[in-house]
Length: 288
Image (cartoon, rainbow, N blue to C red; front, side, top):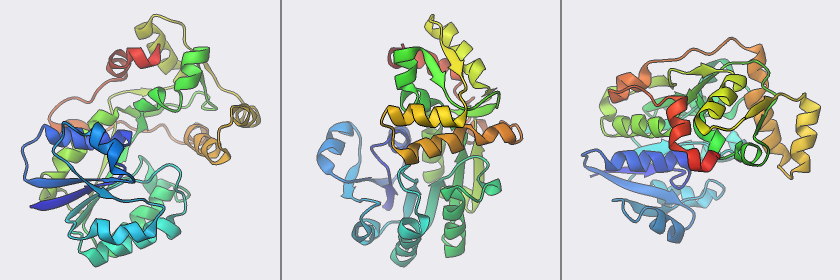
């Protein structure tokens, strides 16, 4: 059987990939990379998945996890920015282990932004000559049920230095479905890159209106200056690195060209991508 390793298996994207694979007929042997197996076994108790210990921060875990691996679904944990320290040895270990293909979760616009870690990781993968597929998703809708949720719940507020910048959006469930289809039909996706978006391209003011309409409550959007945003988030005990990532993600798009939506989700899955309104409807209990 073809052995597939899913990194970040217990996170939002990794979970979506594993769940999407469960709906497809395939002969893949799925291994969820986890730091500890107990919690993962409970989470995936209804899935046909095996577990293997793996930790991005522990370089000694790379070799045993990658042994006999055919396909690697790779993502970058948000807390890891040192590409040379962690991803360079990981790609080298993948090459040595004979990994036949890497599906890497990158980010939309990565080819134009050399400062983000994903750009360097893509370059490492290409240089390794391991066949690859790059998934380049837009802004995660699920940020509203994770990072942005505290402000949304406690203050009925989206508090970001995004101004009037427009963002293309993607539901993580669509990423999971795309990844699953690629992993089960890998030969058609060798050395290809796909930008993954929904049909929505919205400002955060427009997202606030959509949230208000669906939830039936008034959600406001406030765009502070960078100093105020930084000080507010530090007062909430948010780590400095996470604040800087949020600034990079939300402030810099103000000075960039409006991102384009793509049709790749529809082409790769055979259905329309999930809309922002549907995402909000499906997650009402988490957003109210």
